[in-house]
Image (cartoon, rainbow, N blue to C red; front, side, top):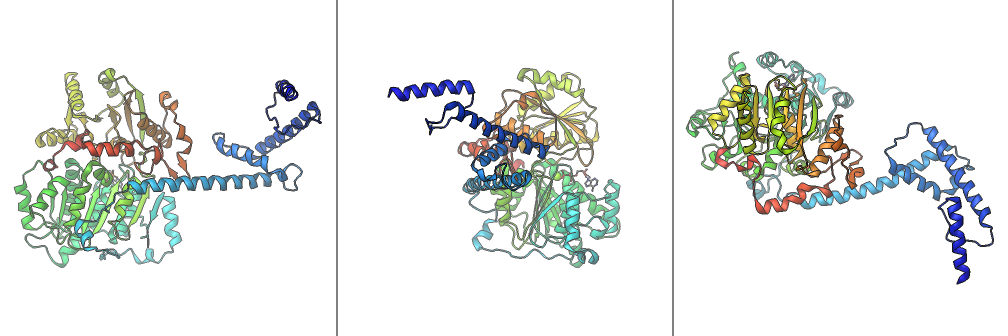
Length: 625
Ligand code: ADP
Ligand code: MG
């Protein structure tokens, strides 16, 4: 007993002297400690020297990838056969080790991914996004709708490798069976001359990437999920083909009274529906004034008289652009029939489902009588919604330009720490950053009103919109702002999706939205179609940490300046954020966490139970939409 105690003491003293911690438990007493230590030290030095040499050879090693280094070191310790005396060169040895480490990491990743998939599955919507009637009848369409449009023959004759090259060059990711070829000019898309000149009049001469790949897909009749940055021209991808199809239809067999619609476009806000309606109307006018048949497009939104809308329907309408509430209302009352409708587009699809319109969308689907072409568009499209929606699509093509949920790179994003009580005053200072027009977003209606009042008091030409205002005021404010008669528009998220104001210079976020997707959509009101803009976001300690982390990683992705209070914000799981190409949360799309830590998922049950619509758009009653 005494003997061992003594030994242990000696060993401890020796340890202090040598400052070497790699003490062996199987102490062998008959080798003098000093000698043994020396030997060990030599070995360690050798090994360190080797590691040093390896690092030198490798040159620029990613210093952030500590995990990898650690694993490699571990590997080296166990693989004695690969010591300096081995016949393999150091570089080869290193490569070998690296491969092994990678493989091990790969399997860990796979495990994590599998676990995440399970979580995603368990929270996936039980019912698919198919219409109730289709589900009941068990109808499964296998083939896409046939259209009269074909790509030019010489493009069809080109090899797939040419198409792949173009997609790569334009950063277009395209998934699905029988991918349609990308087409680089509007002319080759066989659009009628009046359309080409109408586009030109708007300064639209060359298609954007989403149009290069998206238009051929939609024109061919394919179902599609289109994901591209805010302001990258998604509207044209679904607006032009439906005009073309109606034209074809009208030429063959003109619409009679009470017939139609042939195409239906659903938008999450009245203002967006109005804007989309105007664009389609513009194309129809261009055709009509050049001797083509007249096409009728109808806007069905809340806040307007149903009677007028009914009259247009009675004359026979080709295209309806609607918000879900009013559409549901008119479908229920059998004022609109979808018997001949063959084309359905959900613009800002993920937002619409996220806003609680899922059941409405499902019901709308059930009114279709035959097969339809279904299109979903947005700048953000969490996997949860992609998977869920795919069930409603037939042989879908997914066209993806940039990561789903990534912010537009043409927006300079500034995030500033502003105390709650200082926010209002700071807005005035922020307004100095750029010339008008400026958009200010706030989550709550009361805040919008307060900001609006404050700005008016300070002599700023401001208007405001939110769901609590009556339709006339909303329309009036939007018109004034669009025309440039007012400098500032203060709004809730009703104005954050899809609205295309000319030349917004600056978006100010009075508060950070609860969802990072809404942030992406808000700041996407500026920096549209090649122009640049600024977004300033006020945050303070009232903001949830998880949303700040999402924001931080979004800023990193967009190569923006990271303010110190965000830079110092860390979490345990931060190093696992990216697994290969799979970045962030697969449920909500946030970049600052993985699905296992998703705060939205956690909040889901409580929210569902309470069914409280804190955000503005949920406080609409359905007739209002
Ligand atoms: P998104 O729906 O992707 O946010 P929009 O369809 O609203 O974007 O288009 C944004 C703006 O870009 C619109 O003003 C539109 O006229 C313009 N635009 C669309 N396509 C083109 C193009 N190919 N070239 C130039 N401008 C375009
Ligand atoms: Mg849009």
